[in-house]
Length: 223
Length: 223
DNA sequence: TAGATTGTTAATCGATTAACAATC
DNA sequence: TAGATTGTTAATCGATTAACAATC
Image (cartoon, rainbow over all chains, first blue to last red; front, side):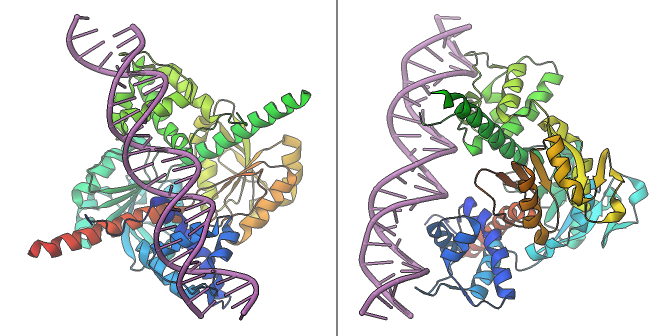
């Protein structure tokens, strides 16, 4: 009751984009219905989990038939809030920032990078892809005039906090942080960190575990 | 008993790099001991959680004093398997691949990109940063001769599966996949996906939730 | 109809959190 | 000593999984 509005579990949210990708493929192939079983199979998940996830989007399926491909696509897009494109600014146009600015897939996520800011004055007035690069001094007025809610931060770690504080001060409500730094921000600001270290940590720890198990196993082969 | 070797919870593994970053900062400032309370404070976590996480690294602290900064750093690096640098190859030298090849932080993670491969023949013989770019035809011999265990995949989504199958065939045991595609691979191959869509999904869904709550709240202000 | 699939309710599993004794 | 912090054991919480009735 108490404001349990759309409380979709984060693990579920993380799986939704994978479903969406598959579904778009199916749609393009002309498929009309899809079963949770098929999706699960394709992604190496259990059918029950897929059904539970799908139920979070509010869509209903038909026993024996499955779910409407188009219906599911719409429901997921809606659930993720990817239906109405959101303008975002990019701060930091280094190697990573450049890759982000040039990335064409964001359209699928309802994200549109409309402007970039970089402290290197040689970049001012130029553009990466279709994204113009401005002087950071103009950040405040840009954010306020264009009612920008989201900032993508791709500056060096030691500038990330200062940049975040600034954009939040100008009215930004959500930050996608690519800098290897844990930001301290007011509770009502949404922060998502996309961190190479974290991602690689999981890979690395699993590789290490496999190696140890292997060693151990080949060691105990002796008995 | 049954091979519960190093079974560290994945959520814990994901937090370790954050601790590590802080600790390295403390070390550079000359701090010798650190408490779980301080780390927790700094990262917005609960002290108990930090203690639990730390206990997974096997290191012990001193009541009232805390943990040795250097000891903790070593323990985390060891736990993640970041102590002995691992050679990796990069497949796909587009915008993202370039950013990855040029990224200097990988040294901290024990990852070293030693070679890159791209299907664009104009790139063969050139380099990004210090990383030479080769013809993909040479991938097999390179992997085998250099005993490469890890491949970083940054090719377009529709080539990712084929590339993954190939490198696994050549002996790669772990894949860090940046392509927006869920790979199907043998169980004994470790795969970690770093996916902009997934990451943004969480941000996006939270933003949407906030907006709805706000709307709802301001709506019910009427009573 | 028989078989496959959905959706719901309950059981299980694992991570987080709480409580508290041990200790410097 | 008193207070802060660790480490352990138990309780809670939430996600995954299982079981099964409903249904096309």
